[in-house]
Length: 258
Image (cartoon, rainbow, N blue to C red; front, side):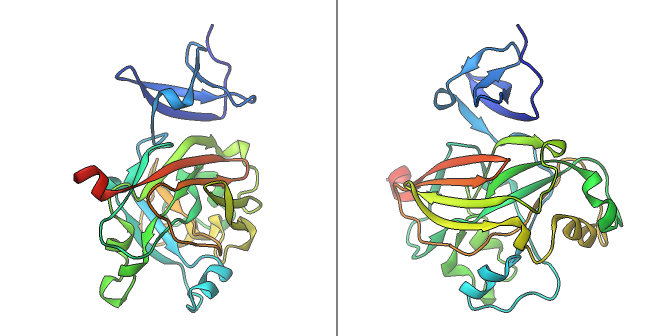
């Protein structure tokens, strides 16, 4: 029996083979044939192959305030690279010798078709879907010498993404989604996408004003107040209401190399 259509699709490796999977309304993860999987018994990949990944800094007023930084007068953009990608339940590697590393739970916006000079009124029509992202950063390196913050934001495994790509039609209002982060089960971060300084539609308008966004390009939309330190052994659960829960374990780089 084949799986019922679902707006939530992902990718896993099972038995050395890449498989497309779907999440059913009861939370079950199934293959195309309808076979149910144990989500802990497979290796999760990001739910699609991203193209360009563009992130925006300080897109929540309360997050700018907790860092004692001024609100940007236009979207403050920086790149994330594919080396940073890791799937649901993949390991986040905490670099050796650092002081302060933290999570940033974010709504990830996935573009569905070529978009150039798109106005905000029509921008959501270019969205394929949404996912959950964790835009990790080593705060030690967020200094003027590392602007834009490529080094602080692009260590390997510093962009968990998934578990699913959720069809845009299943998220009627991307500006009404609760965002929460739990570390070892403790609620550390809580906000709502309604508090973005620049909405999803305005971000698409701004970015497409100077470049073409193509299918499977990704916009990371910023994080609210509530960042805190991560250490080896921590489990991070990033939740975006209506989109999903992304879970990853932090491991020390030293444990992998020595």
